[in-house]
Length: 146
Image (cartoon, rainbow, N blue to C red; front, side, top):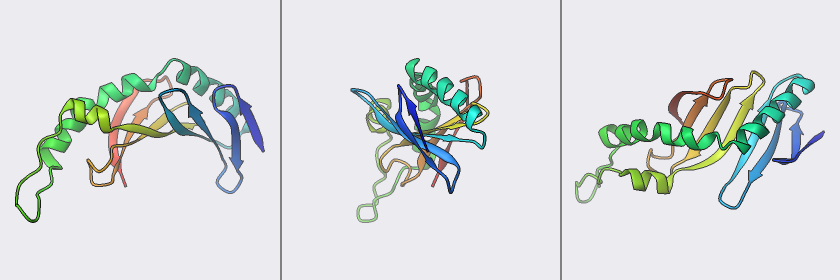
């Protein structure tokens, strides 16, 4: 099954796992989108909500919201020590953080909440940053996965 979206293009149903997946792309960004739920009518409503959220650029304030916490986490607990020289890597700056972070996927749930998955190269040793957003589009928290 396919749902057509003016923002996400064709959303394809993964029948085995019961979710629709598509892609968002503009001049600056490209990332996957996923819609998880059991009721088709409800999912269509969530897709409409997600289209509005994406048009409002809801993810940009979320990225800004996590900067201080994630930079502090990196610099306080995740600096690597070079095995050959014994030197500890330099702390990451805000500019370096911004240059390295990118959204890879946004997953929208049937209750309108979402998770923004971000790649940040190898800053957290291959882990991804997950930004949790409540059903009203408000920041809920951030964590690492992987």
